Image 1 (cartoon, rainbow, N blue to C red):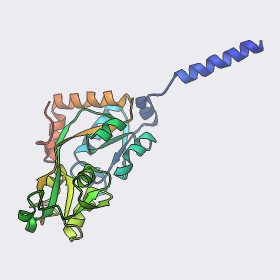
Image 2 (cartoon, rainbow, N blue to C red; image 1 turned 135 degrees about the vertical axis):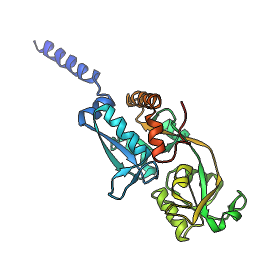
Image 3 (cartoon, one colour; image 1 turned 120 degrees about the vertical axis):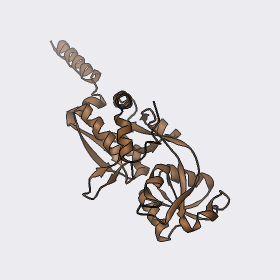
Image 4 (tube, rainbow, N blue to C red; image 1 turned 90 degrees about the vertical axis):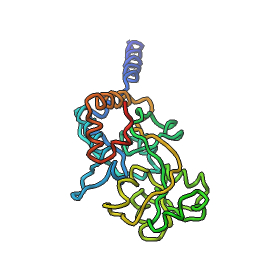
Length: 255
């Protein structure tokens, strides 16, 4: 009898181990998709009421609706994005994230959905003299810590201060505490020049070419759901409609 009871306990233990909750089941059970973001206009940023808005913010809300859950935006230190994802503090990274070898190795990525680049932002008054790689070598740069702009600064050996987000990097240049910033082209186009909050800033050099992806945990079934969402959004025109709302339709990868 004791042997039979012991055998039953082993079987029950094996059965419980055999079932592992998938990411989709985990997210649907808690009813919330937690998204890691930073202040990154026009992808994710706060409006006058303090609500998160932007191209990526609108997309993630539509995705969450397709899953039948709500969205919670979690502002994170971008340099800690992998730790935040693996520890389940967040469920995905949807913030104009650049596809890099580090990102690809650390997480499961969606199909690319936007073209982007890292560009050098300088005062309009100095744009003409800072139009070549040689001319900007001695400048002091502001970058978002852990961003692709940070990587580009290190790759070129530039002196750079690392900040919480790209918006802070722009503020440093505007205030004169940094000569230039390296940020995403999509953000630079939306936030600098005539009619923006930084009319005295512009972007000159492009340091690379890149694509944006959404990141989820390795092995997550959320990846398939994401790609299905993107395919449907391309087919019904919803992705381009949202892109036009924020003026970035030219950056969207056509399918």
